[in-house]
Length: 302
Image 1 (cartoon, rainbow, N blue to C red):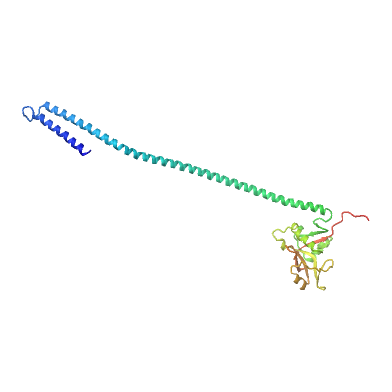
Image 2: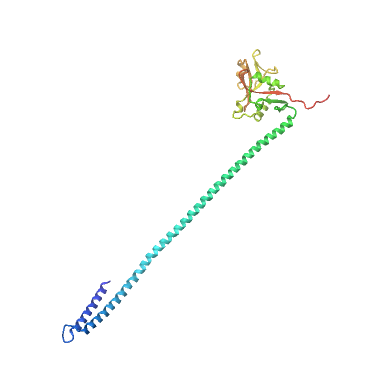
């Protein structure tokens, strides 16, 4: 309450006191009030207090009206804050749900990709197997066309000769004399390489007919019909023809100039044509290649 309101209230109370004193001093100058005077004074006092209460209530109402806009502003700020916070929480929840959905979709895509990769790998494996089978069938078809009846079982026809490669049939290795004896038993002899094209032909096709397992083909040796003759100091084929070209030795100078008594020639597969090596005829155990002429399918009467 302001100072002006306090002063007005004091003035009103003072006037009431003066009025009561005036009432009490009347009536023959006696200081003792009568009942009538007392009632009148109390009624006047009640009216005054009522007026004061009304005035005070009006003042308080105005004061509250002045404070309401400020409280309203504070409440609106708080309301907006909680409303925005509620929107943020809702947006966060939606974002989390979207993230969970995206992760689920991502896992499903990864699973589908893995399944498709497994399926494709299976198809590639089948294609590779079919290609191998196709190559084998093509070889068998060509082999049947060219070899039908002309070479014995387990023999291969190249150009004008039939070849027996021991590694294709069994893994039992022999020394040079025993290998030649096996070829003779089969009606043939150890391989004689008469010309360079024959050596190239064997080198290009040997890999197709020999199953090496875990051993590289370059480490598998084959006896051929060439041995060192100590008396003549020359390399001689089993048909008693002296090897004069000497083009295919791994170490040509050592093969032609050193003493190789008791040595025979072994053929090793390789990228180049330096394929022959001198090794011990008796002590070395190797595979072997036999050669014979193909059979005649028909005779021509003259």
